[in-house]
Image (cartoon, rainbow, N blue to C red; front, side, top):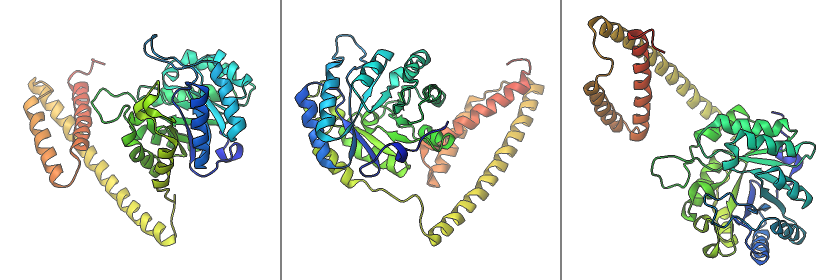
Length: 360
């Protein structure tokens, strides 16, 4: 994708890029007071607000609608902040363009529907407005990239991805699991694509915001979108994850923005560490290859003697022994379990193909 760098179309007050504002536009005074507070911080470049809210149930507050766009115009005139709004239909895009909204974004619920993304993207053609695309609710990088590609094919080159976490069935301290490996892979595949982090939707509560924001900065993300409300306790949506402009100012002050590279001595030492890791990785792959060769021999032996593939007692003993051994060596238990499960799945698949070659 041909992406226009942030620096070529957006003057950022102070790196990283900070986008903030209430989850929902609720009243003219609430919007203006919040915007004035954010403007005083000096680091916020874009003011965000939800005008149309995609809610799970129809009786919940679904936003103030078009009248909120007038409030955004007033905020832009008063504070000089650029404005951003979530759009879920071509109609939303049309109204935002008429109201001179500066940046639009497609939300997580919309991104999962290719037909909806296609329709919205068509409304971007010939406009040139910057667009941000949040990750889908489900942890699927292909769906995320697909949405970004659809928007880009509509002629949008001022494109940004927003990592807002993913729904995960396991109980967690987060509202949405960060699954950092997914935005990292997105950055690997598309190194010129700016990626922001939305700690508010990852955390679901303000107590975790700093930790996640710092992690995003340490992973070289280009900015943060953090929800701010002049009176979070009275917010009509997502009250627990919003903070006041003063609290945002304090959070930003605490952030440590690290350099992407160091001096020559640092780089030389880092390269030595990386060379050692490369050697160890090569050894790991060699050992893994030899392990799979033995698995194939076991499968052939089982087939000859008509023995079942899965040996539960053996698998249980492996889990217990390997995890205990790994923990004594300082390896994280959860990581070990995931690794062993992946290896075991591949082992079962290999044996299945040898014992039952006609099965898919």
